[in-house]
Amino acid sequence: MGLKEKCSIINFELHGDERGQMVVIEGGKSIPFTIKRLFYIYGTDSDAVRGQHANRNSEFVLVNVSGTSKVKVSDGKESFVFELNEPMKGLYVPKMLWKDMYDFSEDSVLLVLANTHYDGTEYIRDFDEYKKIMNDYIYDKTV
Ligand code: TYD
Image (cartoon, rainbow, N blue to C red; front, top):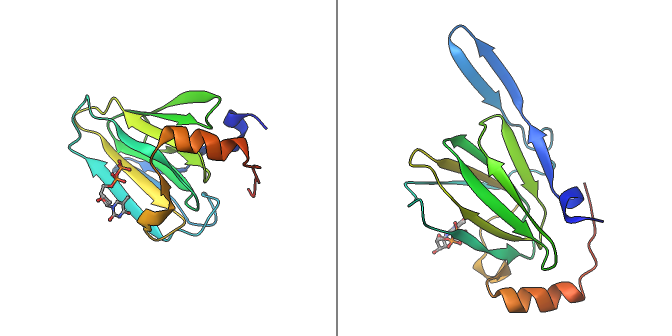
């Protein structure tokens, strides 16, 4: 399975009327897991690179609810860049993929939804180690 097939772009429900816009995200419905955690990243320098890790257990959905950023996703062999630039569009990233987030606009608020509580021990932060692990890894697509 190609890298792009492992990830997916999710279009959230948009409710707009004369008062403005509202986007609805429901765990287990519009995103393919039960939400256990969310965090958001803002005030990021435009030249900062965040992420730079893979997670053994965590799946994520990333959405720029304000502003823009880019995320580069890699499986150690292939990579692709996704522009997070619409508040009604998210990128689903399954576990065991490497992520770099960068090119943050000044008004960027990057919302991240996760299927896990935070556990620092599930992070792989060394890309060479990650590539070695991925040589033996059999991807199991569950969604
Ligand atoms: P870090 O993993 O470096 O963030 P990013 O993936 O955006 O580069 O996390 C920064 C700090 O925040 C680090 O000390 C761990 C802590 N943290 C939590 O305590 N809980 C969380 O859910 C996350 C994502 C990070």
